[in-house]
View (spheres, rainbow, N blue to C red):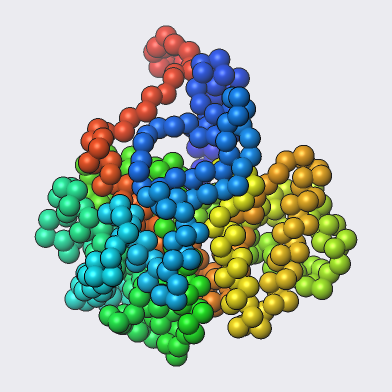
Length: 444
């Protein structure tokens, strides 16, 4: 199809649609829902989670150690409190959904409810996954979640309690949807052998993911522990992150929970949101190919400057895994994952890789501070990518795993908005164009 006319019209349209940056200040409109100091514009209230990365002293933004709270509990304490259990994620889900920490009996009953929903509907695997492979697994998850709508006898019931039950059903099925979508893709497009392992009801969500992904179904205690923690730290991140905000905007129309989650999945698919950890892993691979793990500190500094000068990797000028929109000094999730990566690296004989990661992190933060005078935090993507690599998680699955863990947060915010707001979300925009006189066709 010849798109020359469309391309020409699109080029001409820029003369009529351009919005100069100065107009945002003139009209007092927050571009990208951001204040001039980079902080987000407050658009709601929540009691589900909070992200703290700076303070205001005498009206001035001041950096501070980062904190992530789930229902008022520090993520560090929740991770520490789970001990050797591989059901830390399930306990986190209970907390986010119900607002309080469960007793042993309550957690057991909650986990039983999830395991009863592990199994997919009859013929769902054959009809919707194996016969419809997708090159992009986030698209595959969207298709599968929408297909679950047709198996629900009352899919459009948006009563908060019903949304809770439907949300838990989706959460329980996501490990199978994710693992089978991957198997379907590699079988169809790469001609790899197809194997299907069914979820075990005696396994946690983290254990089942490793069990279903691996042909031999084997994993170690430390591997399950690492994945459990990864799911915990990604479970929620406040109501203002793009996918959660998208989910609440969609659900505020009183549409079904399946549509709201599919919208959030579409948001998380974007490389500016859920795909950053993949970029970080690819960047570190390129760096180690260039200079090796035993590179000197000077060699590391040189490659950092090349990245910042847009002379290495993707020429973006960004050191992926460093810096965050909210966290200024530290990202608590990165601090947690660093220690868990250290333990798993010892088991996997990957300490050389881990020690290089730590050296690169410290040198890069120093160099960026020298160049820009700006203190930055190592963010969750820096170590999560390395953690998934050590767990032998295929790179195709990194963002879908992020989505799996975040679904509980989407469901919790969906319910909270229904209970305590109830209005359709409709922010305003200002028209910044001109008023035109209509011209007849022959006069144009």
